Image 1 (cartoon, rainbow, N blue to C red):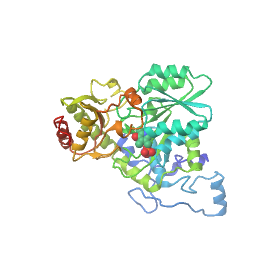
Image 2: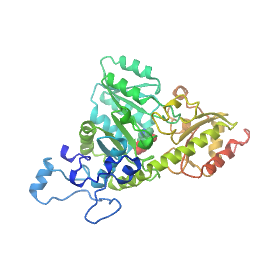
Image 3: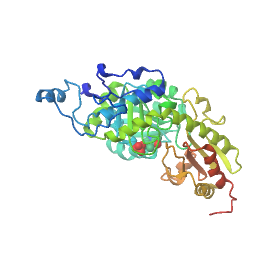
Image 4: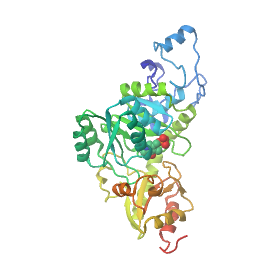
Length: 417
Ligand SMILES: *Cc1c(COP(=O)(O)O)cnc(C)c1O
């Protein structure tokens, strides 16, 4: 199997760009092996299977004695191009693409965990991730305990209370959704390793353009490519990046056998998305930072959560861990749900949707959508109040985004539409 892992390129046709120091160069160039047709853009290999020159060659491929494609559940050249490009951007040895972000997280768990293992996770996680851990993995005897993301001593205490169970994985997203809380990844990785565990980071919000968890000590990065890697809200996909043994063999083995593989068409869209990833992340971060500053000055706004603001509790990690504050801004308005809904409903330009990572700016009310399934106590504990609004800032003219919010923020309190 090792001879056909997705990131095992034949050295003779390697294009050399993977060693380029420039992030943008790797994002544009890595992974494409030009075919005999001399195409400039990456081709889509829309084929389920591949043919062999002879029965002996088929036998050698199936036996793993000869590298090469067999079937698109195992490998596909377009999917492999995306995997190689993302591996080069995250700085990982291996990458495995998956049908969705959730399939990436599931595949990591299936590949690396067994009954009796324990996951220690941050309390603020993407809702389906929590559901996967608590409802499904729990059925197979894998328990998950939760700690506050940025509280390193809480992680440490929970690790020390391990008891009979073996904590195999630490799992987090940083910055968190929607409050943009951050954890020091260098310290968390060191803590995981001291306790014989692996650190898995969902790098969805920053992408490798802003943050490279593997370089900070994390063992595995997972992605929902659906968000910023695509960047234009077109399709669903995911990826796992890490070392050759765990990702290239163990996680890949799950993909190859269980089949949550990425389609070549979606892989091609993500390849195009990666080409502009850095440009988009920097421009969207710049617009988000401007908006956050402006929101802070609005009388109707109680509090703004944005890593780039000096009053953010983990502001010191901007620059040392993540390159910018990112493109997500959360803010609380005075007047609770009624006031928050009024701001959302007064927008004409912004999209009212729970998705993020698009060039189109999106606006959400977390307490009644993405975090609606939490009990009021859980929401209070995680700080997601009724007045909170989340913006995922896109690429429109920032002045237009501001004007769209300004109208709702300035409506008098009694004026309910
Ligand atoms: C969207 C998202 C996921 C899940 O990804 P899908 O592609 O929707 O399966 C996981 N983690 C985070 C942080 C997300 O935003």
